[in-house]
Length: 140
Image (tube, rainbow, N blue to C red; front, side, top):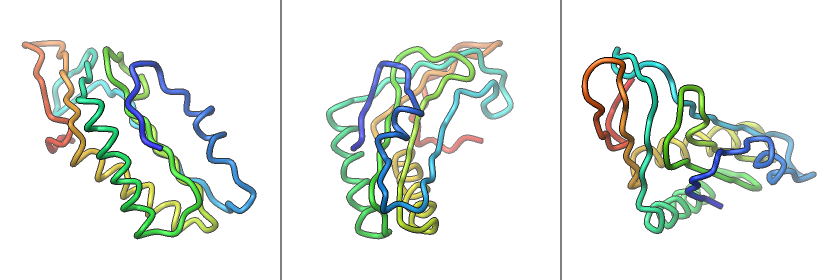
């Protein structure tokens, strides 16, 4: 399942959704709002998404990951709205029988999500005007 959410992400609850006795491994990725971007001090972020298309493309990414890597379950959530430093912006979790499938699928899902989803962020800097950035724009 892939969702866009305006509510804070509860990583612990999402992790519980992946519980399965067949799984011997679970890999998660958490993307947090950090205090710098391209060397500029950041105060906060705003995320906007075209949710219907983002969720449809997110489900496509999960299906592609399933076709490429052996795993039991996967879940991904991306936040929208105003986020402050340290807030959880994106969460991906993959449960698999073995760790290789979990690691590979988790990396594929987050990398493809960053590259393909219609999600934009507005970075609020300590100095200078805020800027809108496509989440797929290469940054540090």
